[in-house]
Image 1 (cartoon, rainbow, N blue to C red):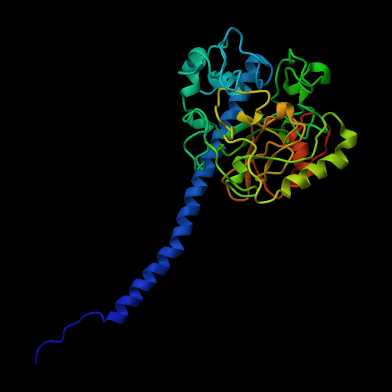
Image 2 (image 1 turned 90 degrees about the vertical axis):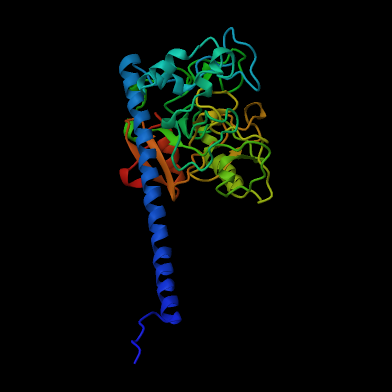
Length: 363
C-alpha cells in the first residue's frame, strides 16, 4: 500500500488564514496606539524644552520672552509681503534651546521675511517646534519653517486684553484701538506679574499648522481646525461687565457655523513661520483662551484690521492627539488638557492676573 500523504485541507488552510487576519486586525490598532503614545511623549518633551528655555531666559533677563518687540515696523528693513513681520518670541529663546548659532544669525534690524533673515532663521526648520503628530509637513508660507507651538497671549479680550504671559512689549505708534499701552497691559511680564500662579497659567500650547492655498474645509472637522471662520458677532475688549452676554453669543456662533461656511482667508497662516509675528495675524505664532481645545477658530465682526487673527478673535489650541492638547504652564510643567474642560476654567488658565480660583482637579 502506498504511504499516506499528510497535509492541510483547503478548509483548514482558509481557517488558519482567517485566524491570522483577525490577529493582525487586533494588533494594528495596538501598534498605532503605541506609535501615537511615542509621538505624544516627544511632543511633551518639546514643550518641556520650551518651558526650560523660558526659565533660563528669565534667569538671565528677569522677564518672560515677548510676543514681538517692534509693533508695526521692522526698523530699517525693506517692505515684506503682507508684513511687516517683527521677530517673535521663539527667536529670543534660541540661545536657551541649544540654538546659539541660529540666534547669532538673527538680525533685529529686519523682519522675519526681510533682509538676511529670509535665508537664515526664517528658512530653518527647528524640530523642537514641530509636534511629531502633525500630519502636514509643508507650511503655508515658508514651507520648512512652520511651528506647532504657540504662545498664550491671554483669555477672552472681553474680560481683559493681553492677559496672558507672553504679550507685545511696545505700544502701537499708530494708536490703533486695543494695541496701546492705554490698557496698561502690553509691556514686559515678569514672574511676579503672574499672580494667578505659574502652575495655573498656560504659556504654550499645540496648534495645528495652517493650510497652503485656497482649500475648502468645513468648520468642526480636524482639517477645519486648521483654518479660521468669520462670525457676525462683535467682541469688545476690556469690558468684563459685558462678558456674561457677549462671550456666550460669540461661542455659540462659532460652534454653530453651517457646514458650508468657508475659511476667512485663502491661505491660512496658523504656524506659518516660527520666527515671525504680526499684530493682526496673531495665529502666526500665538493663541488665546476663548474656545476650548480642538474647536474652531473664529474671527469677530470687529476683528483688528479685518485680519483673521486679531487679539479679540478666537485663536484656538488644536492638536492631532485624541481628546485634547498638551499645554506648557508658566512653571515649566506640561499638562494634557481635555477637550471637555469647562470654558470658565479654560479662560482662567489663559490669564496671568485675573484672580480666578482654579482647583487642580478641574483640568
